[in-house]
Image (cartoon, rainbow, N blue to C red; front, side, top):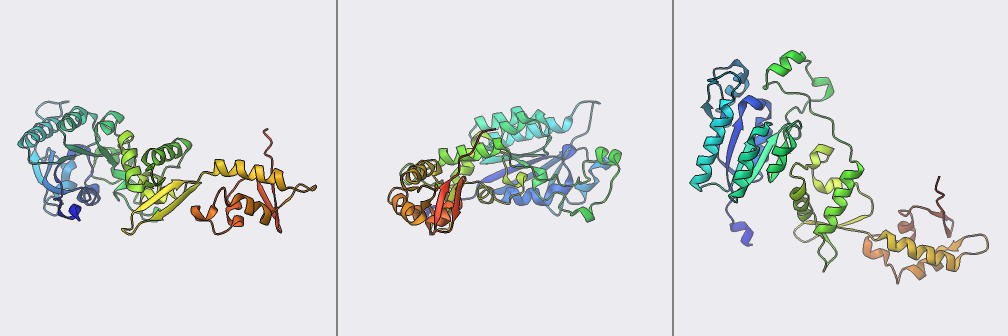
Length: 326
């Protein structure tokens, strides 16, 4: 395959040590490795500060190149300026396909926008508190909390005074609890499935669904909701059918339950008896030529009806239940 001959992207990894905890290093670099080769790994900060002791202890382990930035003036962030200058030099060199900016600081928003304007990918990494402006300026943005930064169970968490926690960015905070998949998130997923659907086949490639989501929500990550992969999150949605191809790529499509409900209502009114019940066998024979449930992965008509709201089954009969608005 041609894709096998493609060279991996060369990435420049630039870390704001003053604004990032060292406990995220392993997970951070493992995540970056999914998108390319970290050809340059530089980390910026005032290395005379005791607050960076955590980073100092792992520089060699991760082949990070420390760049010293003294705080020349109180209140001014020399680290930001040094990182930005180096980023522009690396950009102008033309040797890199993308940049990984590791910080929760919105000051890097113009830098991310400038790099993207040059046609390079920008991967941002920061805490959930990272301002939206910086998150949206990146092609993809990853929350450090999702990268195994504090993968301890409740019984393993060491209590650290709040004052100490705030003073040192190198102390890992407990991992945040997964968010609930609310209505807004579900609507985003359903819309992305629709936008990614191939009109000729009616199926949407899960990889393309992820790309569609990233175009509008660069910071979207299924791990934020407790799912290791997007496919697992999609499986929690109602009304979807899944399949995999010979290359083990996953696809999904929305089952047209709206059309089915209209057809069931039509069939029920046509075949119901005086007691308000219709034969499953007769109704199924009427429905199948018009809505073949086997095409959507249902083994039988009864299996299909078990997934439909407002349908009651008793013995060999069925009836439609009318939902009464409060």
